[in-house]
Structures are given as C-alpha cells and as structure tokens.
Image (tube, rainbow, N blue to C red; front, side):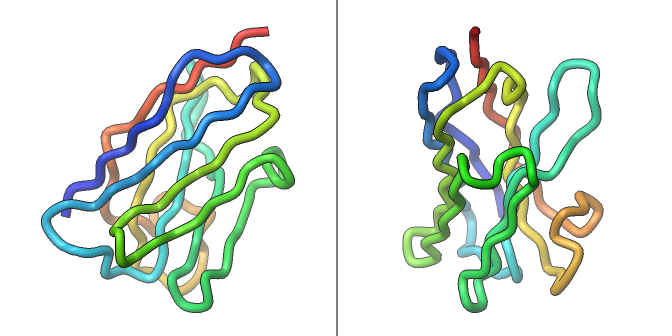
Length: 123
C-alpha cells in the first residue's frame, strides 16, 4: 500500500488545517492509522491515532483538545483536523498504518508510512 499525506501549508498561529491520508493500491487493512510529526532537529513524535475497531482515538497531550483524527475506511482516508495551531506545531506530518493492537504511540508499531506533508505555523 502507498499512503499519501496532503493538506499541509503555511498558516498563522490560531488558524486551522485539515490533513488527509489516503491509501492507494489496496484499502486500509491494518488495525489503526496514526499521525506522527517531526520538527526540524527533533525526533519523530506521536500526534494521534484512530483504531478501526470501534473508532477509538488517541492523542498526544500536546494536541488533545485541538486536533481531531477521523477515519473513513470506505473512502480509504484518514483526516487530521488541526485547530488553534501554534508555532510549536510546525513539523512534517506523516501518516502511517499499524497492524498492532496496542502501542499506537510508538512508531515501530507502524509498518507503512506516507511521504509527509509540511505544516508551518507562523507567530
């Protein structure tokens, strides 16, 4: 499967963006899809994940209440709605597919990764 992340851009603090992760080649078949981000000079960090079973969602503390992840496996798409963006949210955002039942905050539990989309938030 190939994952295509899109929707990034340059916005001012307080604005919103909606990222999309689309799967091509086959439908999402794993247990969950997650978003991670990597800021310049920093490691990759977990942002959010949605488990297909029951549509359970999980968020990093830094984005909880501002970001919302949603999945549509009929459309083969996962969205990340990002509101009240802050300069600290500036990063390349990656989506990934997991086949793990647990540990969705850990990148090594994800097998397929998209190419990333850049989000830049100016102050």
